[in-house]
Length: 458
Ligand SMILES: *Cc1c(COP(=O)(O)O)cnc(C)c1O
Image (tube, rainbow, N blue to C red):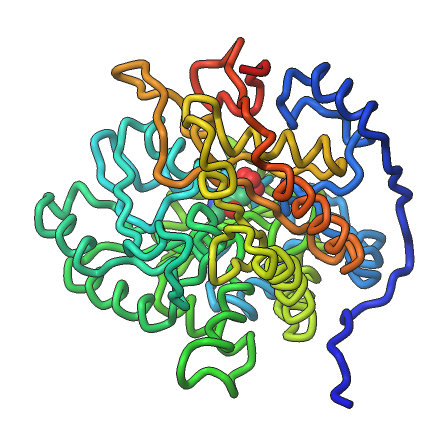
């Protein structure tokens, strides 16, 4: 008998979670105004709201916490993290920041000016917000296959080189301070970018003299997909692949809450001293002195160890297999999900799940509310509530895809939890024709409304 795969860790500490009743959940979701961000975490049984900062640290990371040196300047943690970043990514210069968006803020303050154009693959929302806040423009050059959940493509995060070259030829090169490649591409469903695509982007960027930066939150998951899916990489180690990936970039922004498996933290990795010197000024202004930048020493130690934990093949195999385990259970029951499965989450296609609901009634949010009522599972809407209103017309924007994202925290839940989640979704799927009413907004903020929106039944 072929031995099955099993998790690459055993559990040393646990946190109790409590199931609730349907009656309790009906009351709580109403009190939360049908916004899952307003629920107390104790009202949630399995929390798949995000994989950001929600992972379980290893015993090695916890022991690093105890070794934290809390000196203001020049502490040992700084050198430990600097060495780890250089070892894993190859970038000689680095600046610590309190999280990923802070790294974006520091980098963009250094190189973006008003009116600039920044091409990329489905820029993440904080990235886009930091670009638009500077009155600049994020141009999406993702391949078309990413926007059809049924098309099977191994690298749905890829940049369409023809679209990219069009942006580069139709605009003044001085107006394009960087190209951003997001690995994996969160907004298109945790989809990877191929090594070949990274090479092609680098080549064209060099031709036009434009730097390339990677938004690297899930760089290790991206490397895993390259190893599994791209010709010529199956015998390479994850760390060799990671090194090669970053060799095609001028720098990186990192949300360490993802693939470095810490609860808080970020950094900027840089190849050029000249950019580092200029960025340092903003880092000191916004984050803190260059050797700590908004993090405590113990957290930086845990982050350094997390970079090694997160690039272990056995860990990545466990993680990505668990996400696929959930995805496959849903797919087998005919539930429409983004395919191939992403690295960090399963994305349910809500328009196909509830085809009879009008888009004005926020289909993905309705589905997420029904899933919570069914099983106490918290997912998140990636759809028209998150898309906000058009700033000019004030009308709701309805993106092509209405998705419900089930993000899996790292090393946190077992496969029995995944079975529970799948059963909850399957139950909702079986009663989907009875879900005849969606939701309407009763109160909303002008931007990033999904965090605080209030809703009621339509
Ligand atoms: C989470 C994330 C960010 C922002 O990082 P924070 O740590 O949440 O500030 C940026 N880009 C991508 C792709 C992300 O997933």
